[in-house]
Length: 122
Image (tube, rainbow, N blue to C red; front, side, top):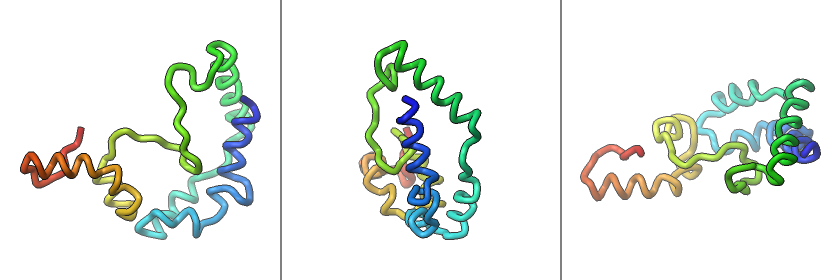
């Protein structure tokens, strides 16, 4: 598990990591300025935080024989969040439509069928 944590950190913060190339990181954002604000907050974690994360991950793996312990893992290369429901106002404010339209289609369809003018959030 230590190696897994180290690899995630490398994918994020190494010279070739997601947070090291502002042009790549800015791609999904509507505003380059907004992207810069987000990127400025993406700082490497302290050694203590990294060790704490490793300790938790090792505990879960050692105790349950798998990680994550109670849910299936998601494979999302280059993405460190998962979502099951989109808060459309947030995505419309900060992201290009191509980044979320496919996921929003069921909500849009439900809104059209039911005659609502706004997207239905569930």
